[in-house]
Amino acid sequence: MVAMDGCRRIIPFALVIVIAGCGSGALSGPGGTTADTATATITTGTSEATTAPVHTTTTSPQKKTTATTKRQYGWSLPEGPTSPTTNEDVIYRRLLGKACGEAQQELDRTWSGLMSPRNAPLYQAAVDLCGGRTSGARSMYGKAAALGLQMHQGAGGSAAVDCAILRAVRSVLDQIAQESVRCTPGTPPRWPTEDSFAKDDPRTDVVEGTTTTTTTTTTASSSSSSSSSS
Image 1 (cartoon, rainbow, N blue to C red):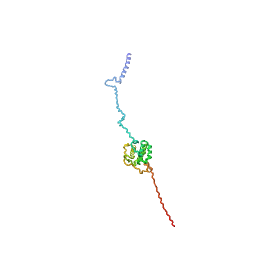
Image 2: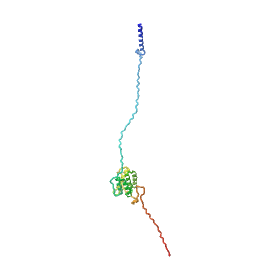
Image 3: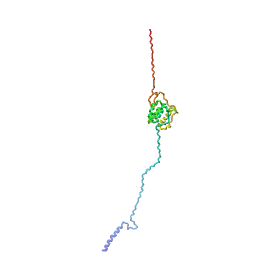
Image 4: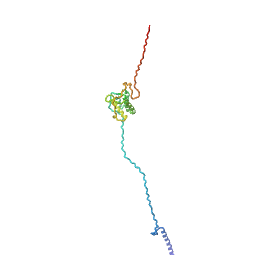
């Protein structure tokens, strides 16, 4: 009975051994390898890295620009010229002292006594520029140029101040240096008459001159003679 019990105990133990050996490959001989070999296949994925385009801003060397301010030519008169015996010089002295209103009054009072009819609009252009009226000055200068800009050279008359006025006016209107304006030598335009009341103001389109007309009425008298006979 003891032996039987011993066998009963042995059999189950042997079965465990057999069961453990089946399919495990532990009891397989060298000729038949039943062990599964796990082969790990490593797939290396080659991915192209997509790089966003880089916008490169190329800054070219900047050129250094120098701001050039154009010279502005304003109204001014030289101190020097004088012609003390003329009406032009009196107006010139008012303009030289920036007394624009007084210069206008003097011109309005003595325009018919100026040396040349051209000087009336020429000096009016100067008065306008003295008062900052560029548009009016341009119109008056046009009237003066239409009459003629010739000027006497040398001493005598109003040539010295006329030339200075012309240069100052042209300098502002044309924006050029006074030194670059040339005064044309020659005979200035003359008044058509010496009668101040008969002169027309060249600054206006109105006929200011008055002409005295003498009307002579001839009355034909007929003499009748009566003869009486006795």
